[in-house]
Amino acid sequence: MKNEDIKQLAVVMKSTAKLYSKDVDSSLVDIYFDLLIDFTMDEISKAFKDHVMTGESKDFYPKPGNISDLIRGKEITFKPDDIIALALSKKTPLGVFAAAFIGSYDMGNGNTIYLRGRAKEFLLDLDELTNRSNTGTYSPWEMQLLDKYNIDPLSPLAPGLKKPRVKESKLRLVDKKTVNGDDFDSDIPI
Image (cartoon, rainbow, N blue to C red; front, side, top):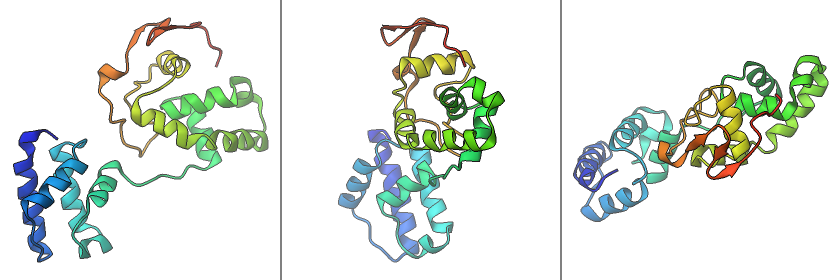
């Protein structure tokens, strides 16, 4: 959000508050503005509308955390078979990283029990990978994998997840052999 969006935020908050017989003053708007500043006004407006229309949440005025959760989306749980399917397709960052973790030989020749075991191991680090994706702090090796498979580093980590909230300027691939000043081998087998 930009500073000039505070008036629009106040309008959205006050109009929503009428549905809940709640008073919204300027100090409350300031608090919401400070806590939701990383989101766009369009995202916030949509989240307020979604909150009003959604199940049990429609019974209470949304707190900043409710709005943030609606913008970021629900947490998706992946099963080992989901990871294997994504790894076979190599069309998302998560699929490419899973394929690299499991290994290309094993993807083509491993039995189901072995592949599920490797996918379970991969899932142990999924939270860390998700955080790196959301903040745009991929390692040079991860950036090289994405580049090899023509995957946009700003694309969602996997289907159903939101795009990273990072500006493109923070993810810079200077050339195929240098990422953020680090040199590395351009031939990683997958």
